[in-house]
Length: 349
Ligand SMILES: C=CC1=C(C)c2cc3[nH]c(cc4nc(cc5[nH]c(cc1n2)c(C)c5CCC(=O)O)C(CCC(=O)O)=C4C)c(C)c3C=C
Ligand SMILES: [Fe+2]
Ligand SMILES: [Fe+2]
Image 1 (tube, rainbow, N blue to C red):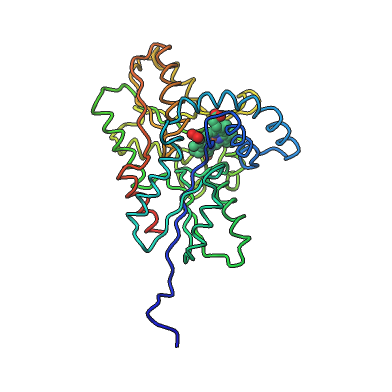
Image 2: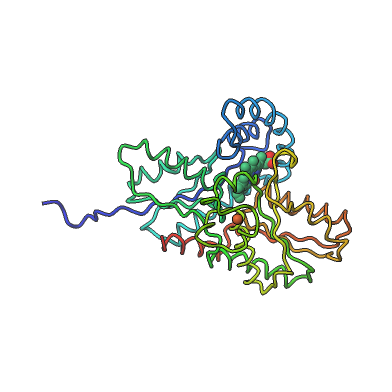
């Protein structure tokens, strides 16, 4: 008779995944990161015969030295890339909170620690099943979709394929919303603001239309409500996060604006989601909006796109246009409310 004392159940594996970051802020590492990132067909959805020569041969070599300079500004001399160390801090705290019945691993879609190494950690521990949480509140094929594809590609090669589930979007998760709102309220107590900007990472409009369920989404007022037809529409999800955050902060719709940042290509050739943050904020001071509090709610950890783009570059633009006070709300990083929110999402799954 087999011993009845040994439990037949293993731990539950949890895989937290963020986008990725270079191993160092030096040009060769930034080039390697950008090469992996920008040849992903879910990010640059061109035929491989065009994507590889164009990006490896032209875009990345030109971009890498410029990006490296910005990463050098961002890099912490002891802990390195914020996206990485905040992710590792979150992993540790969520593990402590979930306890010994769970094993929490952390991976990056591009570069290190790889999703492959994180999955291997869970496999070595013979976890019972795996819950994957891509750390992107709003689903986009280029972010969450790419993580899902990579996880499925890797796990499909295992002889024993475990039960696996994905948390694909958490735009309106009360824990996520309340964690961000709490950070915003702390800033609102320190200063008087004329307006709030919710600036999301942009994606090409084409990506939204490609994911449109039965052509429901046409980049118009379709995105003004969040419903079963546009549950995975990135634009509708961003608007929903803004509405939820606005409500949690006690704002009326006129007190905030939703904008999109970080477009990669020329807008003439390839329109990205609009309005563009840089264009909107340049117009604000002339309209009497001189004090702005900015959130970046497409990111749950501070990174190049929050600290440098929103916190520094947009501040400079705003001030040059006559603005007086521009303040970025820090990201969720590994704050206690966010650790609780992640733990709750895992428990509910
Ligand atoms: C929030 C989710 C993200 C989506 C959606 C996304 C789409 C997307 N991004 C690019 C191009 C670049 N993004 C870069 C940095 C970057 N992007 C995200 C998240 C999303 N991207 C994060 C978290 C980061 C920061 C990483 C860090 O190390 O701090 C960069 C690299 C930086 C630079 O050179 O400017 C590029 C390039 C595209 C083309 C795209 C959708 C099609
Ligand atoms: Fe990006
Ligand atoms: Fe829509």
